[in-house]
Image (cartoon, rainbow, N blue to C red; front, side, top):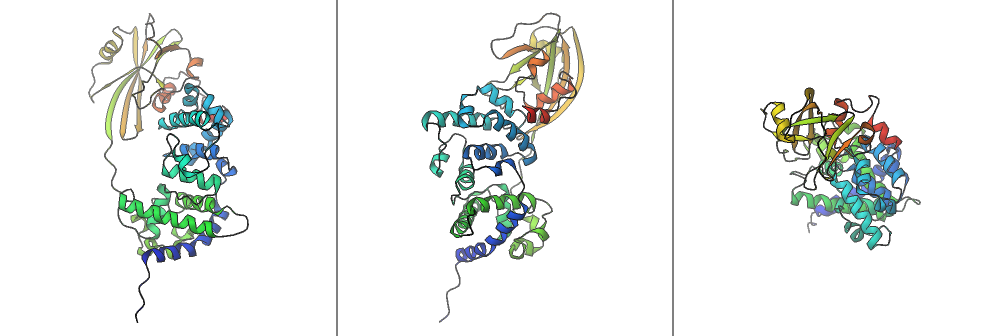
Length: 384
């Protein structure tokens, strides 16, 4: 009697079972010494995971360190005014992340008596927390067998098993989640001293994708999984994953006015409906690629004329699906228009440094030489 062929799921499970010690050994030898890896505090791990979304590790480190100095506990974050939270986040982008962190901290304080949830449903109930972030917190902080699937892990798994299709499409994505869950449960079943294997397994997969199994030019010869990697066997590992092409970025053009009266500058806070809601910037007008003369744009913006108007330069800035071109003019006014309610202010340079500016308008601060030349925002973050 001919035996039944092995089930595909069983083959995957046996492959993962054989690879687990090899992957964990590689991680033990090669893991980067990152500040959030020195703690099991779920709050600290939550902050790091939110900051790392769409942002490189080298950018996150100084922000994380400054954040933990300013807001070392959930209660500290919950009690902070929104403007202070945004100021500390300024430069990281995707500012809804900071607003969600603040909302979640207040939720924990008011609804959970200040205790960070210790299970997957509880973490998932927090504002701004999705399946990946909840799984990361539960596995890394509590060593629970919760799967995670970020861009790095998607890349590792699609290459390991040569999985065709877009990993963000539902059928492929569901399959990847199943593999990730199978792998972390295998880690949970092992007993190697007092090691926290669920936490190590998930972090090892992320680290492998970040350091070895990179999007371009993967270092297959240094990969602990290489002998069993199906994409490596094809000779074209970088052809996986088969992601859909990104939509073409839209070009948008703005004229920005750095308006000065004596030693004060006019700034405006973005409304709640704007992509940089709550952040400060200089007055601007959006227009087509061929704008009217700057004097005409200034009159449209302020219903008056500037005593002096001079070009300061142009700034190109990318944000989500947009490519922005900001043409910047310095404008001197003889009489200071009254600031409109709470969304406009006249500020001297010292006061400007206390406000949270969007990344594009931080570039304008430097272009206009309003702040001291030695001001380096990463150094300032480290010292804050």
